[in-house]
Image (tube, rainbow, N blue to C red; front, top):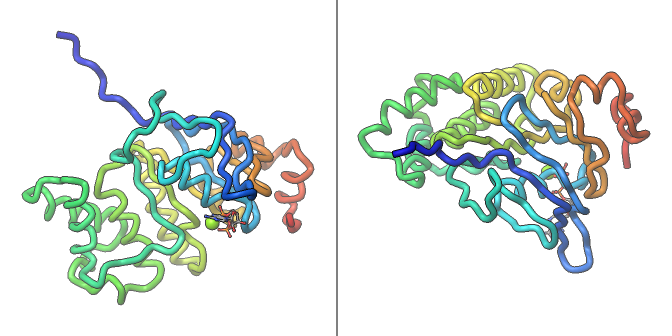
Length: 242
Ligand SMILES: Nc1ncnc2c1ncn2[C@@H]1O[C@H](COP(=O)(O)OP(=O)(O)OP(=O)(O)O)[C@@H](O)[C@H]1O
Ligand SMILES: [Mg+2]
């Protein structure tokens, strides 16, 4: 009997996908694909639609018009996709219990959990923090715990919504190191950031959003060396896009 390869959620392809709330268009006819490989970084000013695009690609909302497919299929439940929200909320329990909760939700065998929790804490640089109350951890530590919790379900693609916003340089570096480790494991990362330096350090591909539209979508090398649009040139030059 032929063995079929397990189906993949990648690429995640948007075709003319729009999201509207009443008369307001939040995402305007977006066409792009998130494919396996280096991270795709979404940049753009406040309110440009980054979070909404992440929620759409995660499958938390559906397009009002247009289409989104996951490995060529529509409406695939997010079993192989994980997300860390802009302001992750921790349960009022230990760091380890927060990860265990995510594992239980993902249906991971109880016997496999303790070893895997240690592995995940190590991956995010929180070895020895398992019994600490999650809400007492620093902002940077909580962000890394949120990453461990998202990785608990062994995702194929990880969405990170501004994972380093409001972190200082050392905490930012720690989170970026975790992102690099995640990428090295072959997990596709799609993340948003306000930090152009971070985009330079992590991105394989860049998507520049402005007012619900994709202004430019290209490799990071191309984006930073030869931005094609006026908006991209201004953004790279550090001007304010309003
Ligand atoms: N459910 C909703 N109802 C009405 N407006 C919404 C809704 N969700 C998002 N918006 C609006 O859509 C726009 C895009 O929001 P979104 O959160 O995607 O932007 P963003 O790029 O993530 O911004 P930020 O950088 O501030 O996080 C904003 O103007 C926001 O107020
Ligand atoms: Mg946002």
